[in-house]
Length: 388
Ligand code: GLA
Image 1 (cartoon, helix red, strand yellow):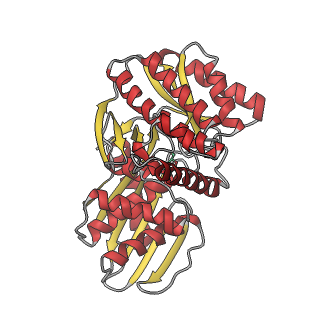
Image 2: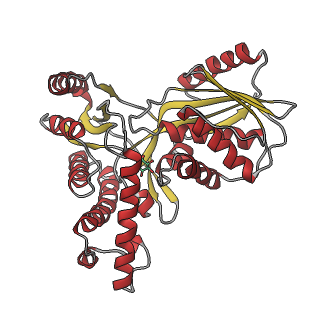
């Protein structure tokens, strides 16, 4: 296990001891994720290329003899407490994720006893690296272990997705939860949402590094815009299906079907989807061939498509991408994650990362008076749990 993760688990465990005057009996953890390419493809049953990063949510838990559930968020210094079966109204968003996860799990597996738990995390919130998925996945792993529930990893991440749908009212796909559960150290995944399967590719970047630049724009309204996109592509698919009997689902759509979509906006959304899926395949090939210049071009093309066709970018993200692309040692750049804020991902020469950081920081302050945060994450294993 990575030293940092061990250290964080130790301090969360100490905090548990302090608060509950007993040691936790089990620990679960789940990482945030980056996504190299393949954005807004998951709920359209397309392709993506994510990996988990060295930022985690950790849950330390100890079963109780009674029916009480008592959970402390170490980050928010907040506590939620209720008896199993009793209606609880979550106030803060960490409570919504927590209560949603426990309720959805509890509807499937009987919770005969309660528990004490502490949740801690260092996945940046609202930056597009899936802090919420990390929270759901960590909790579900903890619950699976605590109640020895017979549920496999795929079914588990689908339960997590239901938390988003039912408790946060965002109809998101499976990208974040899948990446948080299934990633492997030093690898990228080529994830096929139609098959719900993944292939691992070596992420040996040689002289290059993935750099994340945070716009610090939090994704307000993102939920409704996101669900709007989900609806738009679903409507377009229905229209194509009604006009072309060869099309049964998203993955049967080809460029020739574009003209079957009457609404020009929906047509653009589908164009993004078709081309983005192809870019994931091309990016996988570029990676295998270690053709990083080509990989960079695919990244930038993805951004243009997300900006113009899918319309999920924002001025700050566009500025960060344009600024990065001015630099000769940046091969490509794009917005990452759901959009409307969050961060960009850029492919930068390792020996120039420092220069990149300085330039991006200065330019962003000059334009928006915002101090960005720049990160170069490690690619790590997905979620896990163990008893202590
Ligand atoms: C958010 C959602 C994911 C995915 C991405 C865009 O992170 O939670 O399901 O749709 O946006 O690729």
